[in-house]
Image (cartoon, rainbow, N blue to C red; front, side, top):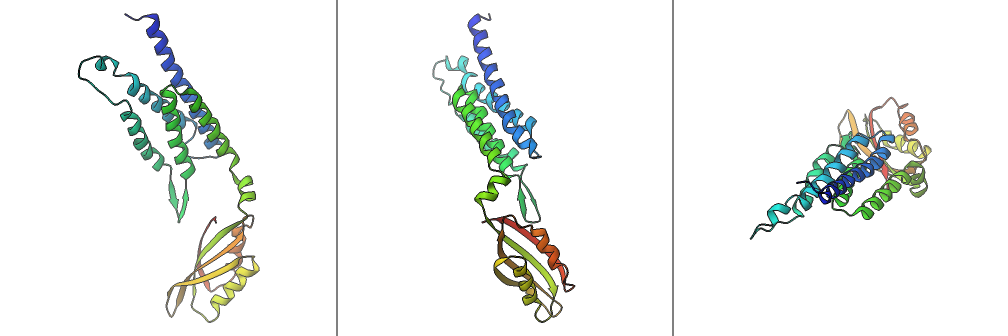
Length: 232
């Protein structure tokens, strides 16, 4: 028989799932406007599933616990959420030409699972506060603010060129003219026909590295250029 008390409990569980979905949607919205692979729907699903897992873990075995000599650990499903959600997060991380993207989105999915778990356990206040804090952090720490915080970044470039006299010095001069500082050159491979080396330096965060690449391309002795750019 379904009593009024049972209905209230069921509504409380439903409220937890709804609140978890709203929190997940808020985090996913921030990712969606940044055109990330895991957007609103992904974060909502993760939050709802995590909340439901936690509700089942916490309340789904009451009937068994009433039996004699039965003991269960309600935290075991929560522990599996932490591990299992990592596979979803790993799917958002991409590596293209030594450039890694998707780390923040993966971390956001993982955090969404934690928020869903907290709300599923009935910890509404901390779950909602964590959502707002996470949303604030992801919104504020973007390019405009990072340009203020990080003034200089590492500029790393790998060049394959024809092995001719003074080719290294010419390239170093060109880099200096394009405001690359603290230049360090390391030869990776050399033969009679070609030389491959790595040039490492520091540039202003607002400097367009594409301009440096195009400036180097004017030298016919340079056959290939690949580069990476990251914060120091």
